[in-house]
Image 1 (cartoon, rainbow, N blue to C red):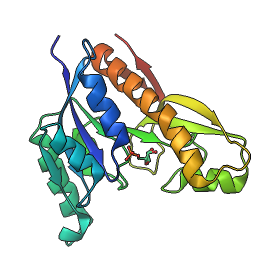
Image 2: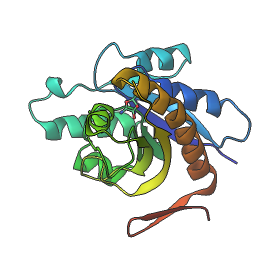
Image 3: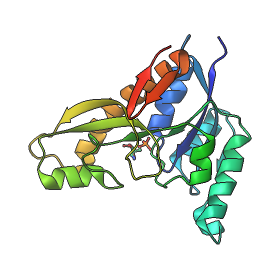
Image 4: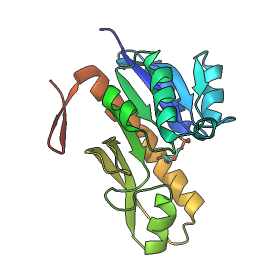
Length: 201
Ligand code: GRF
């Protein structure tokens, strides 16, 4: 079987990217990371890509007069690698309409959507006082973390958790979930019916 081609988008440390890179090295995972893109310079994610000998690129919004031209540039950069699936793994920008028309995109989010969408999900879940939070892997649409949910896992909030400690525990679960979901999508394909995502043929 030809492995599915993944382009992974990152904004930060890239531990989710690393989990995917490690999984892709195992037999029969069914996918390979062909390139990594970032929205800013100096990300750990791009360093990890370079260490793995993979091509990496940066498309910064601030280099464009309008968001639409950033959307076009990012679409072009990613299209050059002809991905079957784009994985947004800690990518902190809303993808544009051109990009989303062209590629299927999966995102990982550190909360149980639809609770706590947006960039401060862990902080907001803690501040709200929830006892259970977790992570969500979902297809990306034009909203903020509103796309169809593929899979979720729960993580308990511990007494005395701060944002950093809770986020690290969520990320441990998140990496495993992302690797599992992306691998199954790559090997088995998926269908979307309304908001219901079904992995399998
Ligand atoms: C993840 O928790 C992701 O859901 C969130 O940012 C974190 C990225 O972590 N948006 P990393 O860069 O993959 O280590």
